[in-house]
Image (tube, rainbow, N blue to C red; front, side, top):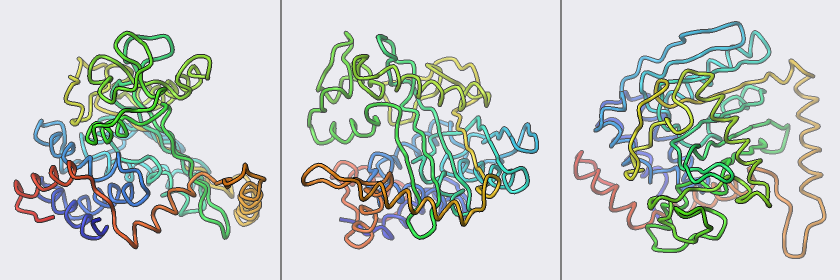
Length: 355
């Protein structure tokens, strides 16, 4: 176990070492550690070496000059200047929030960015202002559309944060695939198999091999196969890709550049600029009084939590498992598997930073 503050300080110092400003290093570290605290280990400090490799490859600008390149009263397109998505994302969401303050809603598409961590972090930023926050991003092609042998889409997550009155914010944060690729990476490090339904092999057949995607296979859309609704997961992932890439002017589909940890992938000739995201902020009082709405959200949450459950189980609200994990890990520390500790120690040796 490593205490969150120690892990945060280490992460911050690594980002400083590659040239990030104090503000950006602190923000980027906070996004990553928030993932670990919430139990999303695939998007926490395990990703830190990948961001450093992006920097080494010249794909990451540690001092980006983010700017709005097109806008209307309620919309904008942001160019991230090859910055950390961990930094570009909050900047773009703040643009959406400011648009919503005056127009009621704000919608921001982003191009020329990089991996932005967990989508939920960005969506929650709007909820702090009595707004409904939405965040989505596409990613490198690891996913085969229904019936396809080719990888065409990323895991393409969606997050929606909705504030309540006395209850914690409702937060739905999920990939449009059966599982995020980071979960396969964790099982690869442990030498374990994956459940059936997560991936297909190079021949398009179901597999339990955690290395299947590296060996010509693909992740499966949410639903896993046509009989279980994979066409719906395929549709969700397509919408995220179009909003994040086609609408923003970023790359899209099979042209989205790979994250540095996907060493088995190579970037194809692009059709746009970098990686893209999409953010939304909706001011609640543009629809009805905020206090009234949030009181009803409390009612909604409490009623769902009190739903009759199967024996030995409890109905949870989206965000509940992550909040419970955050409370536990804040107190007891964050478990970091040995391969990740080793990779972090290698970074520490390179930059003179002790874990």
